[in-house]
Length: 130
Image (cartoon, rainbow, N blue to C red; front, side):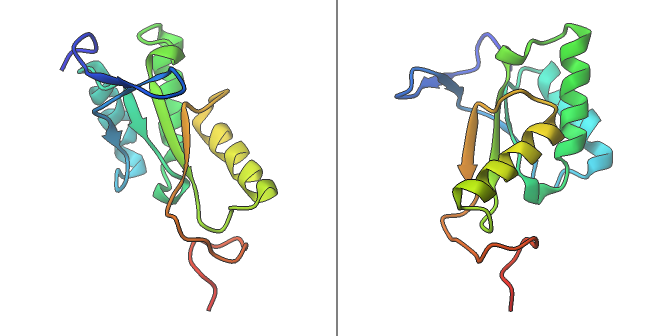
């Protein structure tokens, strides 16, 4: 897959989103650099992340290395991440996005989603309190 031939779809906002992306769920943090670097080298330009996946810090380090090497520019990669179900209020979502940006070492996300369309009571854990 070449970045030049990777199909993108234009969103209503006017931005384009690559139709094929690398999902990072279950990518072991120890394997992130190899997996992500290989994906970017072969043409992937959409990376899907989430706090729940517990590998955003490693993804951020790998992206920073790719960008600083001159191999890629930030505007050439579409980054998606997700706010977890316990952070749907404005203040909690804002805090969660700050954490995402810090972990990914990015100034912005291209797309930020609510992870699942189900809200939990606000707390610090991932899953509902019993």
